[in-house]
Amino acid sequence: MLKISLICTVKNEERTILDWLESLRRQTKLPNEIIIVDGGSTDKTVELIKEYVKKDNSLNVKLIVAPGANIAQGRNIAIRNCVNDIIASTDAGCKLHPQWLENITKPFKEDPSIDVVSGVYLPWYETEFEEIASYLIFPDIKKLDQKKFLPSSRSIAFKKKVWENVEGYPEWLDTAEDTLFDLKLKKAGARFFLAKNAIVYWKVRENARKIFKQYYNYAKGDGTAFLFPQYYLLRFAIVILTLMLAINLWYNIFFWILAILTFSFGLYIKYLRKVKKPTIKRLFIAIIVALAIEAGIIIGYLRGILKHI
Image (cartoon, rainbow, N blue to C red; front, side, top):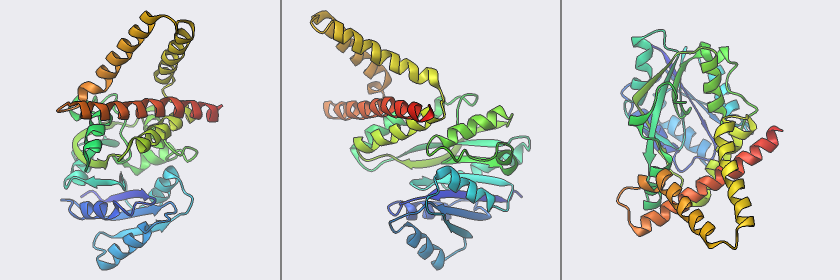
């Protein structure tokens, strides 16, 4: 039987940590050990974990408090403290499907040549705003391409030896560390498998400000690591071209009509057509979310590029 170590990094997760622990307890297959690294919570996260473990430590939880550790450092600390060869990684702020651990580790048993199993994630929402935001943020699991999909470390499992081969998560990155980790694994020749039945439910941000910050941080991490430059530079080129035309053709009504129509069409194709049960209110919320995402991406990547330079 496979022996599995489950790792998780936390920081200021008092609102969701008990949901995460309970979802872990309900797994059809339990890990042999659980290593949680706290990066310096200032709320009751650590206290809640300790209370939960004190009542019943049948989950075999080991809590490590490492103030100041970023996510990459926290994951590496956790993995270094693992005693097993299979590492399953997830995040606080999530709830695990009861069969998540079973499904994300089963491929290793069925095919020993597999090095990494990519799990997936679905939205966990409580309000109408979060529901609508989820349509714009979360990928369609059915359309995921195993060759192109880069798993998030909120839903992934891998052999400890491949983590060692790429020297762990890149600790110089505060965000996008799991993306670069995936790319390093692929470059090193690790064999990936996509398990669409290994599902984690991820809490959607509750307002536009937090969604902006979310995408700002993602893009900043990509910029700092200089990941996917073509993808981001195309966005910058469109913005710069539009601004140049606006400066030169601000007096031309036909330019503004064309610009508004083009913007509306792009917004619909990329975002609005994904909204279920569209109403004026729901589409308005979707527009706010879309603008927060786009602003976060552009500003965050620019900030990351400057940091990279």
